[in-house]
Amino acid sequence: MTSPLAAILGTLAGTPRTMPELARSLGSTPQALEGMLRTLYAGGYVQEAVQGNGDCSCNGCSLKSMCRNFGDETPEFHLLRLTERGEKYLTRLG
Image (cartoon, rainbow, N blue to C red; front, top):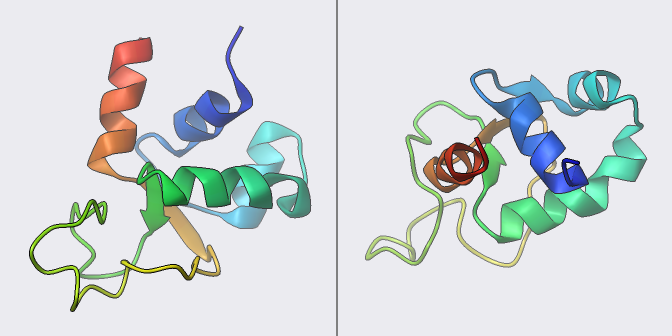
């Protein structure tokens, strides 16, 4: 049985999705997913898919003081994608 967090990661694999798209794919609501997404974001498994974001997963690199993704604030989750860490996690499950 797949955990809810692993199901979210699997749904994001390969294709960034908006919160409503993700909720529909998982048979849930954006409100129900928000807490789990905050957990995945804080762990460096998902990030906002914005131009120029690259593969950064904000694990405290030398540029963290300039990084828009580093800090205590969670993004609005407009368009989500897996980080390299999230992809590696799914590979281990596979």
